[in-house]
Image 1 (tube, rainbow, N blue to C red):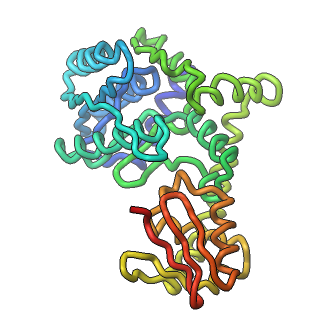
Image 2: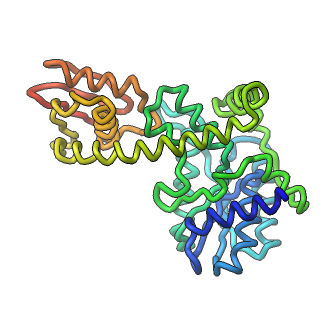
Image 3: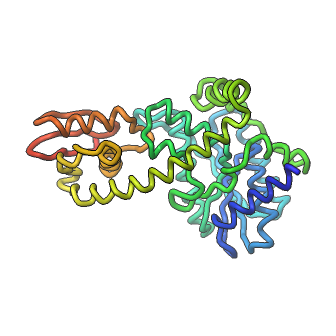
Length: 322
Protein backbone atom coordinates (compact mmCIF):
# COMPACT_ATOMS: atom_id res chain seq x y z
CA UNK A 1 0.00 0.00 0.00
CA UNK A 2 3.01 2.30 -0.08
CA UNK A 3 2.15 3.34 -3.62
CA UNK A 4 -1.30 4.47 -2.47
CA UNK A 5 0.25 6.43 0.39
CA UNK A 6 2.64 8.19 -1.99
CA UNK A 7 -0.06 9.15 -4.47
CA UNK A 8 -2.54 10.20 -1.79
CA UNK A 9 0.12 12.23 0.02
CA UNK A 10 1.13 13.92 -3.20
CA UNK A 11 -2.44 14.73 -4.20
CA UNK A 12 -3.17 16.17 -0.77
CA UNK A 13 -0.16 18.47 -0.99
CA UNK A 14 -0.84 19.41 -4.60
CA UNK A 15 -4.43 20.37 -3.75
CA UNK A 16 -3.20 23.44 -1.88
CA UNK A 17 0.00 24.11 -3.82
CA UNK A 18 -1.12 23.91 -7.46
CA UNK A 19 -3.94 25.76 -9.17
CA UNK A 20 -6.25 23.97 -11.59
CA UNK A 21 -5.74 24.71 -15.30
CA UNK A 22 -2.31 26.23 -14.72
CA UNK A 23 1.24 25.61 -15.95
CA UNK A 24 3.69 23.89 -13.60
CA UNK A 25 7.43 23.83 -14.23
CA UNK A 26 8.90 20.59 -12.82
CA UNK A 27 12.57 20.80 -11.80
CA UNK A 28 13.93 17.41 -12.88
CA UNK A 29 17.56 16.40 -12.35
CA UNK A 30 17.03 12.77 -13.33
CA UNK A 31 17.47 11.53 -9.75
CA UNK A 32 14.86 9.39 -8.01
CA UNK A 33 13.09 12.19 -6.15
CA UNK A 34 12.68 14.41 -9.19
CA UNK A 35 11.63 11.47 -11.40
CA UNK A 36 8.96 10.58 -8.84
CA UNK A 37 7.83 14.22 -8.90
CA UNK A 38 7.62 14.12 -12.69
CA UNK A 39 5.64 10.87 -12.77
CA UNK A 40 3.23 12.04 -10.09
CA UNK A 41 2.64 15.38 -11.81
CA UNK A 42 2.03 13.62 -15.10
CA UNK A 43 -0.57 11.34 -13.48
CA UNK A 44 -2.25 14.28 -11.77
CA UNK A 45 -2.28 16.61 -14.80
CA UNK A 46 -5.41 15.32 -16.61
CA UNK A 47 -7.68 15.52 -13.56
CA UNK A 48 -6.45 19.00 -12.59
CA UNK A 49 -6.03 20.48 -16.08
CA UNK A 50 -2.32 21.03 -15.51
CA UNK A 51 0.22 21.75 -18.21
CA UNK A 52 3.49 20.23 -17.00
CA UNK A 53 6.77 21.51 -18.43
CA UNK A 54 10.07 19.81 -17.54
CA UNK A 55 13.15 21.90 -16.65
CA UNK A 56 16.66 20.43 -16.47
CA UNK A 57 19.92 22.27 -15.83
CA UNK A 58 23.30 20.71 -16.62
CA UNK A 59 25.92 22.28 -14.35
CA UNK A 60 28.71 20.58 -16.33
CA UNK A 61 30.45 19.81 -13.03
CA UNK A 62 31.13 16.12 -13.68
CA UNK A 63 31.44 13.50 -16.36
CA UNK A 64 28.09 12.03 -17.29
CA UNK A 65 26.05 15.19 -16.75
CA UNK A 66 25.25 15.39 -20.47
CA UNK A 67 23.91 11.83 -20.28
CA UNK A 68 21.61 12.89 -17.45
CA UNK A 69 20.30 15.74 -19.61
CA UNK A 70 19.55 13.34 -22.48
CA UNK A 71 17.85 10.93 -20.06
CA UNK A 72 15.53 13.66 -18.74
CA UNK A 73 14.74 14.93 -22.23
CA UNK A 74 13.94 11.37 -23.37
CA UNK A 75 11.63 10.69 -20.41
CA UNK A 76 9.84 14.00 -21.00
CA UNK A 77 9.38 13.13 -24.68
CA UNK A 78 7.96 9.69 -23.78
CA UNK A 79 5.38 11.43 -21.60
CA UNK A 80 4.60 13.96 -24.32
CA UNK A 81 5.83 16.88 -22.20
CA UNK A 82 7.68 20.03 -23.17
CA UNK A 83 11.20 20.36 -21.82
CA UNK A 84 13.47 23.33 -21.19
CA UNK A 85 17.17 22.50 -20.81
CA UNK A 86 20.32 24.55 -20.37
CA UNK A 87 24.01 23.99 -19.69
CA UNK A 88 25.53 26.56 -17.35
CA UNK A 89 28.83 26.39 -15.50
CA UNK A 90 28.85 27.25 -11.81
CA UNK A 91 31.05 30.27 -11.11
CA UNK A 92 31.46 30.84 -7.39
CA UNK A 93 31.22 34.28 -5.84
CA UNK A 94 33.50 35.40 -3.04
CA UNK A 95 32.85 33.50 0.22
CA UNK A 96 30.34 31.23 -1.53
CA UNK A 97 30.46 27.44 -1.13
CA UNK A 98 30.12 25.15 -4.18
CA UNK A 99 26.70 24.08 -2.94
CA UNK A 100 25.52 27.68 -2.53
CA UNK A 101 26.82 28.61 -5.98
CA UNK A 102 25.09 25.67 -7.66
CA UNK A 103 21.85 26.48 -5.83
CA UNK A 104 22.03 30.12 -6.94
CA UNK A 105 22.63 29.23 -10.60
CA UNK A 106 19.90 26.58 -10.53
CA UNK A 107 17.38 28.95 -8.95
CA UNK A 108 18.09 31.64 -11.55
CA UNK A 109 17.63 29.12 -14.38
CA UNK A 110 14.32 27.86 -12.98
CA UNK A 111 12.94 31.38 -12.56
CA UNK A 112 13.93 32.26 -16.12
CA UNK A 113 12.42 29.03 -17.47
CA UNK A 114 9.18 29.62 -15.53
CA UNK A 115 8.87 33.07 -17.04
CA UNK A 116 9.59 31.68 -20.51
CA UNK A 117 6.80 29.07 -20.35
CA UNK A 118 4.51 31.24 -18.21
CA UNK A 119 4.45 28.77 -15.32
CA UNK A 120 2.54 29.79 -12.21
CA UNK A 121 4.53 27.38 -10.02
CA UNK A 122 7.95 25.74 -9.98
CA UNK A 123 7.75 22.28 -8.38
CA UNK A 124 10.87 20.75 -6.85
CA UNK A 125 11.51 17.23 -5.55
CA UNK A 126 12.48 18.09 -1.97
CA UNK A 127 11.45 15.31 0.41
CA UNK A 128 10.92 14.84 4.13
CA UNK A 129 14.53 13.58 4.33
CA UNK A 130 15.76 16.80 2.70
CA UNK A 131 13.78 18.70 5.31
CA UNK A 132 15.39 16.79 8.19
CA UNK A 133 18.86 17.32 6.69
CA UNK A 134 18.20 21.04 6.27
CA UNK A 135 17.10 21.40 9.89
CA UNK A 136 20.17 19.57 11.22
CA UNK A 137 22.52 21.59 9.00
CA UNK A 138 21.02 24.86 10.16
CA UNK A 139 21.08 23.75 13.79
CA UNK A 140 24.76 22.80 13.52
CA UNK A 141 25.57 26.15 11.93
CA UNK A 142 23.91 28.14 14.71
CA UNK A 143 20.78 29.29 12.89
CA UNK A 144 17.99 31.02 14.76
CA UNK A 145 14.48 29.68 15.50
CA UNK A 146 12.98 30.96 12.23
CA UNK A 147 15.55 29.06 10.16
CA UNK A 148 14.99 25.92 12.24
CA UNK A 149 11.46 25.85 10.89
CA UNK A 150 12.97 24.29 7.79
CA UNK A 151 11.73 24.57 4.22
CA UNK A 152 8.20 25.68 3.49
CA UNK A 153 5.93 23.70 1.21
CA UNK A 154 5.32 26.93 -0.72
CA UNK A 155 7.71 29.82 -1.35
CA UNK A 156 9.64 31.87 -1.65
CA UNK A 157 8.07 33.13 -4.84
CA UNK A 158 6.66 30.49 -7.21
CA UNK A 159 8.52 27.51 -5.69
CA UNK A 160 6.45 24.63 -4.27
CA UNK A 161 7.53 21.31 -2.72
CA UNK A 162 4.69 18.78 -3.00
CA UNK A 163 6.89 15.86 -1.85
CA UNK A 164 7.94 17.47 1.42
CA UNK A 165 5.84 15.12 3.59
CA UNK A 166 7.09 11.97 1.80
CA UNK A 167 10.21 9.96 2.60
CA UNK A 168 12.94 9.18 0.11
CA UNK A 169 12.65 5.41 0.63
CA UNK A 170 8.91 5.29 -0.09
CA UNK A 171 9.36 7.33 -3.26
CA UNK A 172 11.99 4.88 -4.51
CA UNK A 173 9.72 1.96 -3.66
CA UNK A 174 6.93 3.66 -5.61
CA UNK A 175 9.22 4.06 -8.66
CA UNK A 176 10.37 0.43 -8.49
CA UNK A 177 6.81 -0.88 -8.35
CA UNK A 178 6.08 0.97 -11.57
CA UNK A 179 9.44 0.09 -13.11
CA UNK A 180 10.23 3.75 -13.62
CA UNK A 181 13.95 4.50 -14.09
CA UNK A 182 16.11 7.21 -12.57
CA UNK A 183 19.75 8.25 -12.64
CA UNK A 184 22.13 8.10 -9.67
CA UNK A 185 24.35 11.17 -9.32
CA UNK A 186 27.76 9.92 -8.05
CA UNK A 187 28.42 13.32 -6.45
CA UNK A 188 25.65 12.50 -3.94
CA UNK A 189 28.09 9.99 -2.38
CA UNK A 190 30.97 12.45 -2.11
CA UNK A 191 31.97 13.29 1.46
CA UNK A 192 33.27 16.66 0.24
CA UNK A 193 29.81 18.17 0.78
CA UNK A 194 28.23 18.97 4.16
CA UNK A 195 24.81 17.63 3.23
CA UNK A 196 26.25 14.33 2.02
CA UNK A 197 28.23 13.84 5.23
CA UNK A 198 25.08 14.45 7.24
CA UNK A 199 23.00 12.20 4.94
CA UNK A 200 25.38 9.24 5.01
CA UNK A 201 27.00 9.56 8.44
CA UNK A 202 24.68 11.38 10.85
CA UNK A 203 21.07 10.60 9.96
CA UNK A 204 21.66 6.84 9.66
CA UNK A 205 22.98 6.81 13.24
CA UNK A 206 19.90 8.68 14.48
CA UNK A 207 17.60 6.33 12.59
CA UNK A 208 19.28 3.06 13.62
CA UNK A 209 20.15 3.85 17.22
CA UNK A 210 17.64 6.45 18.44
CA UNK A 211 14.41 6.30 16.47
CA UNK A 212 13.45 4.84 13.10
CA UNK A 213 11.21 7.85 12.56
CA UNK A 214 13.91 10.40 13.42
CA UNK A 215 13.62 12.27 10.12
CA UNK A 216 9.84 12.54 10.41
CA UNK A 217 10.03 13.70 14.03
CA UNK A 218 12.53 16.40 13.01
CA UNK A 219 10.15 17.59 10.28
CA UNK A 220 7.20 17.57 12.70
CA UNK A 221 9.18 19.57 15.24
CA UNK A 222 10.06 22.07 12.52
CA UNK A 223 6.35 22.55 11.76
CA UNK A 224 5.68 23.41 15.41
CA UNK A 225 8.63 25.79 15.47
CA UNK A 226 7.26 27.53 12.35
CA UNK A 227 3.93 28.19 14.06
CA UNK A 228 5.59 29.91 17.03
CA UNK A 229 8.08 31.69 14.79
CA UNK A 230 5.34 33.12 12.58
CA UNK A 231 3.75 34.88 15.56
CA UNK A 232 7.04 36.29 16.86
CA UNK A 233 8.15 37.26 13.34
CA UNK A 234 5.00 39.34 12.88
CA UNK A 235 5.79 41.26 16.09
CA UNK A 236 9.40 41.77 15.05
CA UNK A 237 8.47 42.94 11.55
CA UNK A 238 6.21 45.60 13.00
CA UNK A 239 8.99 46.84 15.30
CA UNK A 240 11.53 46.93 12.46
CA UNK A 241 9.18 48.82 10.16
CA UNK A 242 8.82 51.59 12.72
CA UNK A 243 12.51 51.78 13.65
CA UNK A 244 14.42 51.45 10.37
CA UNK A 245 14.92 53.66 7.34
CA UNK A 246 17.03 53.75 4.19
CA UNK A 247 19.66 56.47 4.03
CA UNK A 248 22.44 56.89 1.45
CA UNK A 249 22.27 53.22 0.45
CA UNK A 250 22.45 51.99 4.07
CA UNK A 251 19.84 50.65 6.46
CA UNK A 252 19.72 52.87 9.54
CA UNK A 253 18.20 51.30 12.65
CA UNK A 254 17.43 52.94 16.00
CA UNK A 255 19.83 51.22 18.40
CA UNK A 256 17.29 51.16 21.21
CA UNK A 257 15.05 48.60 19.51
CA UNK A 258 17.77 45.97 19.90
CA UNK A 259 17.40 46.01 23.68
CA UNK A 260 14.59 44.27 25.53
CA UNK A 261 12.69 41.01 25.20
CA UNK A 262 15.21 38.64 23.58
CA UNK A 263 12.94 36.36 21.50
CA UNK A 264 11.53 39.37 19.64
CA UNK A 265 14.66 41.54 19.62
CA UNK A 266 16.84 38.82 18.13
CA UNK A 267 14.32 38.54 15.31
CA UNK A 268 14.43 42.29 14.76
CA UNK A 269 18.23 42.07 14.50
CA UNK A 270 18.08 39.19 12.03
CA UNK A 271 15.43 40.90 9.91
CA UNK A 272 17.51 44.06 9.88
CA UNK A 273 20.51 42.11 8.55
CA UNK A 274 18.36 40.57 5.82
CA UNK A 275 16.76 43.92 4.96
CA UNK A 276 20.24 45.40 4.60
CA UNK A 277 21.12 42.73 2.03
CA UNK A 278 22.83 39.92 3.96
CA UNK A 279 22.34 36.39 2.64
CA UNK A 280 19.92 34.76 5.14
CA UNK A 281 21.74 31.42 4.80
CA UNK A 282 24.97 32.97 6.10
CA UNK A 283 23.47 34.67 9.16
CA UNK A 284 24.12 32.67 12.33
CA UNK A 285 23.09 33.25 15.94
CA UNK A 286 26.54 34.70 16.73
CA UNK A 287 26.07 37.35 14.03
CA UNK A 288 22.73 38.33 15.53
CA UNK A 289 24.22 38.46 19.03
CA UNK A 290 27.16 40.52 17.79
CA UNK A 291 24.81 43.08 16.24
CA UNK A 292 22.84 43.32 19.46
CA UNK A 293 26.06 43.79 21.44
CA UNK A 294 27.15 46.54 19.05
CA UNK A 295 23.79 48.30 19.50
CA UNK A 296 24.33 48.24 23.28
CA UNK A 297 27.73 49.93 22.96
CA UNK A 298 28.20 53.69 22.65
CA UNK A 299 30.32 53.46 19.49
CA UNK A 300 31.96 50.78 17.38
CA UNK A 301 31.93 48.84 14.15
CA UNK A 302 31.51 45.24 13.10
CA UNK A 303 32.02 43.02 10.06
CA UNK A 304 29.08 40.76 9.24
CA UNK A 305 28.30 38.43 6.29
CA UNK A 306 28.39 40.79 3.30
CA UNK A 307 27.87 43.84 5.51
CA UNK A 308 29.53 46.39 7.75
CA UNK A 309 27.76 47.70 10.85
CA UNK A 310 28.57 51.00 12.60
CA UNK A 311 27.16 52.27 15.89
CA UNK A 312 27.01 56.04 16.31
CA UNK A 313 24.66 58.77 17.56
CA UNK A 314 21.95 56.40 18.74
CA UNK A 315 21.70 54.40 15.52
CA UNK A 316 23.21 51.31 13.89
CA UNK A 317 24.09 51.77 10.24
CA UNK A 318 24.18 48.59 8.09
CA UNK A 319 25.83 48.84 4.69
CA UNK A 320 26.50 46.24 1.97
CA UNK A 321 30.14 45.53 1.20
CA UNK A 322 31.20 46.63 -2.30
